[in-house]
Image (cartoon, rainbow, N blue to C red):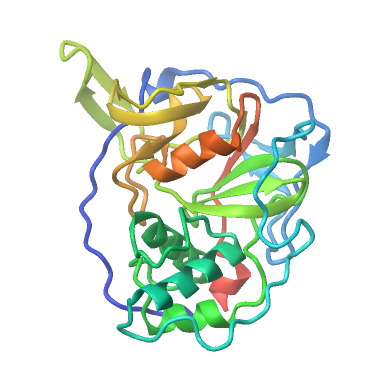
Length: 305
């Protein structure tokens, strides 16, 4: 049963574009040699396989473990999966004072939903973290801590899980519109994302209006890896401005954006908030050669309940 919560935000789709060439014509890099197998998380019943976007065939999904990954800021300890129930409730309806907001922020961080700081300020990254929480647990994704969201945040006893339970990788669940940082088989952090609309486009190139960019707005399924990146800030891609991108297949990248709604809205790239992209760079969570697994996803067991 789906839990409803508050008023849905009516944000319009704004395509702020990925970079590089047409998505339809760019080859997908071959995956690195396999040393670990992605298996389903305990909350799913999906077979451990994925369908490639290019061929439609089913193949075993494999990942390459990263040797000696950079230190990751883990909540509590590396072994904690179960999280105690908060008491008293996280947030009352209509309350947004600093102390209540700070308690909610601390709870989100405890559960693995990243935000910039537990400082009592209900700003951009707190809204994005609440939205990610709502997506995972099946609450209407308005980014607002209403009564249903607060009750769910108080009641949950386990950290969210991606489908991968082996290796170190980035997992992008297009069904949930979430990105999971999986470290040594554990889902440590979760971000709200917005991936490709899967609607064809034909638009003037932002850098050369005499050229047209044509593509399908699809974030390609399959196992990829980070093969190119740009550490500098904003720059004008072929389809719009993007921030500090990390490319994982063709012209498709995880990058910062000023518009990360609760639905697919991009030309094919995976949008995260600008502060989240800075955090990814600062903590080295997504270095070159990191595996990136993109799949259609399913609703989590928690959301289905």
